[in-house]
Length: 113
Image 1 (tube, helix red, strand yellow):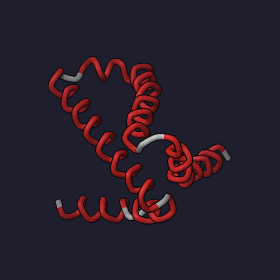
Image 2 (cartoon, rainbow, N blue to C red):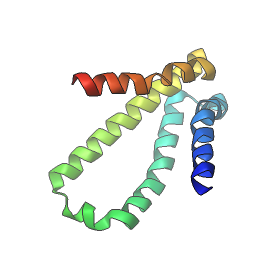
Image 3 (tube, one colour):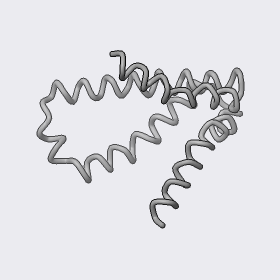
Image 4 (spheres, rainbow, N blue to C red):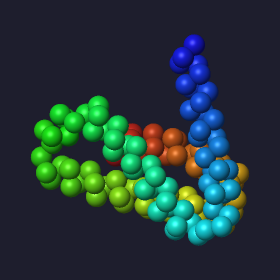
């Protein structure tokens, strides 16, 4: 029963993300929304990572930590900026339809690369 509830909650979260982003961006630019979103999501993620994987994080070489940090910044800032720009320009429903193809393209890239 817990798995069903968690899967429904996950689906609701993914389904409502674009609509809630559109509502949240009514009074601010997509770039400001991206910065706010990244900062707000970074804090609980960092806390959870430190609580559950502190020993694994300590075992990583500093170069690996630097790469993780760099790729995380590029991924979230680039991806969310593009996503929020699209939501602001063409709307949440059209953006969600385009973003739903991400799994197909990820599978294609995984097979070909």
